Length: 326
Image (cartoon, rainbow, N blue to C red):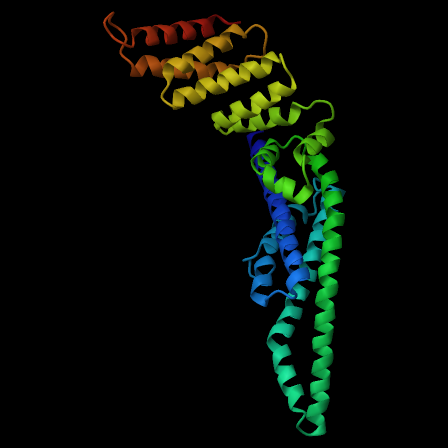
């Protein structure tokens, strides 16, 4: 079971990698496309930052991450994933062809113009120069067509991408990425994209996405981020006592690790107040118990004169109450 969970987490991580590379590839291409419409052909060295075959470009990273996860003979790869992988592969090879067109235009084009201007040489040389002209003209037209084709294909694949996301509706790590990269999401997909994605994935349960992100943050011990995500979920689902419980638990753990033990214990007391109304997992009890034991070990509090006596007393009381829970 543990191996399956590890494999699932690794797959979820790779999905996030694909989504990140995909959005950044579109972002980068659009920048080149707008500049191309205003200033003309990009430099070969600049285009190589978008696509190359040596692993130094964002589009190469996207192609490799797609092939690594989707190009397998496994029933776990869906039809949507296969289509997405094939489209990305085709786009990559088209962009690489355009890279060669740019090389022809940038390196061989000026030399052709220089030779053509001389109008010298025997007929065979002139014939070769004319052939060069055709090659350069084809490269010129090919790059122009390629830019338009990639632009259209990216628009088409974006529509398919939104359908693909439905398969990852339970991927809390992906939802975390959307929350953290909301600006990138909005730039590529438009304003209010996060809300639209949540609507597509979770329908009327608007809190679901934030809840999943909170659970993922909590599992990774990012307690401050978990508090923010659970709080957003609570805004969408006011009065949800399970969310209130998780906010208090996350706050308590964050406060303890931030050297605020008294505040942590107060948060845990709020958890105990909700204990009969929510699902109080043993793993959560163990977390609170461990903090209480740590406080009792690290602070004296045994004498009446000890300044931490009340703190230790509160930790002892909470630990006792945890033991009384059924």
